[in-house]
Amino acid sequence: MEYGTRSEFLDRLAEAVELASTPYPLRVAVDGPPATGKTMLADELALLLCTRGREVIRASIDDFLRPRAERYRRGVYSPEGCYYDSFDYGTLDRALLDPLGPDGDRKYQEVTYDRRTDTVLFEPVAAAAPDAVLLIDGVFLLRPELIDRWDLSIFVYAEFEQTLDRARVRDQERLGSTAEVERFFRRRYLPAQKLYFAEASPTDHADIVVHNDEPQRPAWTVRPS
Image (cartoon, rainbow, N blue to C red; front, side, top):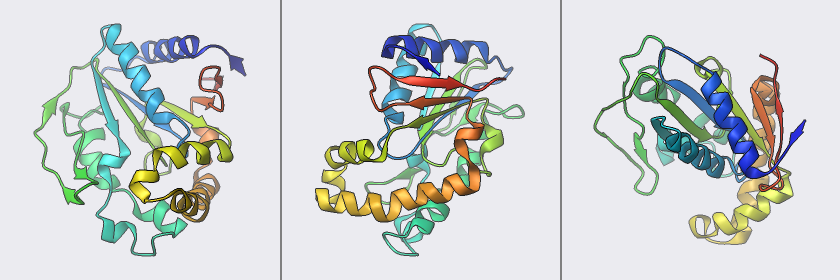
């Protein structure tokens, strides 16, 4: 286990990215349960890499959601629905991961769905440089359907009560009340994570596991190559 300041940790991640050389854009997953801080971490790492001269494609699994009717067909609070029905992995592969992979043409779309309007988007195709870095954050990124898609993977963890406290602030407007935030976490999100751990054991496969209870003093473990 390594410990350090936030800036030291970000430097360590940037170094890991620079060491993970590929002849195509490097695909980096930032996985973890809701409200652990993975989006903030991915944003900070993207900014740091840009200052070091790398082209960064910043994406989120939430931009590849299935329509609301499909996501909640098992029920709004269903953990099985959360784990099995939330995301369109076929579109994620076709639009983003395959084009940036070893046999891809580097022409990609980083967004295909708008959660606010529950509509499919048809964004213009962009072209990535050969040495670009894809940084995508989200839940369930180390599941069996995706595990072989990543050139570097990071799993961000925090104690459940910590994440719930953060979510009460972050998600109150979207879900309507702190009581509804807690209901979603305890009935849908946390049991879905238990399903995920049982099926995929993500912390056994991640290259770097981050303990993010104290974001300014993180601790991390690097899996041997």
